[in-house]
Length: 386
Image (cartoon, rainbow, N blue to C red; front, side, top):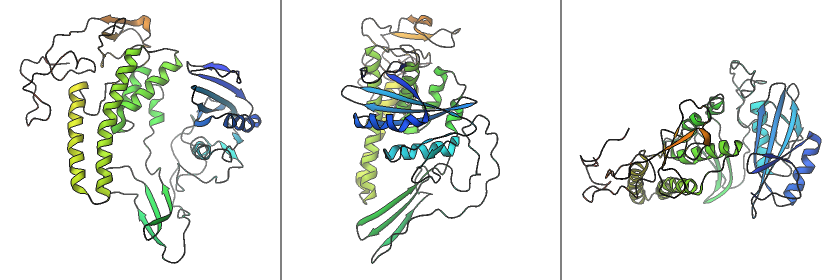
């Protein structure tokens, strides 16, 4: 990351600088960042006990620049000026923070609930440490959908229960013929409490929860978690690890894009194209399994913070200067470079289904076995993997 000389702050991890300020300074500083070409990438709140901490992450490219604006608020009366007039994403982030933490965005143009629907109890903020069990849920008024009126306008409601296995969501289309005049999407019907589940987990163990945030993006969420931990601990991964991670992400992109192309065809009634796309997706899932040991690539991403510190998913690579297999010391809570020991990785196995990425190129599959054959059982000569 390139340090921006125009902004002086405290380094926050490897890639960011942090600027602390009073709530009254927030809007002016944010406006200056927007004028300098930054965009708002994330707003996150944290409960620190007597105070609440709100962090705004601003991003800019060419060169890569990342700046955090940090505001400390009293927990008994948290309020800060809204940035909704400067940024539409800020509007959504602020409404979510109000629902989950009770932080009031002053002068927000649309301060109604976003995450907690109207039947959720008022004054109960589930992400606060002292939230306690939820009060009883109550009946509520109908959601204030904006009705589009006029000659030929027809309203089409979709969801929140869908025919497939997607998450619930309600979509209300106002159309005239083939033209969509307005679409209102209402989400947040289900809550799993994932943020609370992360609290208290060790960094190397939380990656398994990250992989399960969304089934078809296991690798992407695992990488996001690993990058966050590595950045917080100021650990730089070696180049071979970045290349292997990019390969895992590409495997995930391929099978998702195949499914998406099929879904687009199916939505317009071209079911045959969808069937072929799903066949291609299945082939890609079998490649995932043969390459990493899991169809959805779980366990394939090296966990933070050391250069592949997860004993359950060692990464093997033949690049000079990087150990072929890294395992975490049993006595270490945080796996740092000093607590990681290297052990030689076997290279002579003919097994066509290695459990980790990297061994595929050095462990060729026998020509007689192909993943899409009717029988996908590896040859008897293939040793079993733990």
